[in-house]
Length: 229
Image 1 (cartoon, one colour):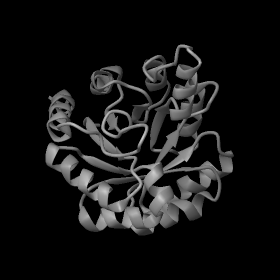
Image 2: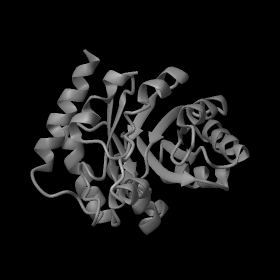
Image 3: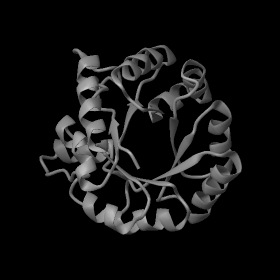
């Protein structure tokens, strides 16, 4: 697939999410993500607001579903999401139900391997259970906890090539990447570049990052889209 730039709106208000989404779309971002903080704070209304404001744009609902798979997917699909996220650590039946909802409702399913002991095997399981995408993910708390303890934190790049080689579906790498690392993930075979905390969202306050974010996003989009050629 073509390279895609996705911004994760890891924010806690609809107003700020819409402002940041408009900035992102002006900069060339392809997909919007209703991040987990936004969904917790605003529920399906956050997704509904994004859909009303951006009628033709793919919207990922980062539910991190662990149970009630069909219902959670249905709620977000009815609000306008085109993609939903289920965790590999959920029971296989939950993943199957999210996949079923995807087929029933016309939404794509992204399976997240956060927390898996063997992330390569987890990615393969997600594909085998019918997911359309794999999110190869090092978690926020894991990164911060290891850093606070003075320990070396793993990077999604450490096993990214192995994950890509293990599956036939598209992969995105998430968690603690620098801007330069995120831009280069297509070189590892992962065409979906995700920009969230701490790249475009302040990881401590869950507010839009300060500085000239629009110019930064435009540069990122130009470089990522250049892989298409």
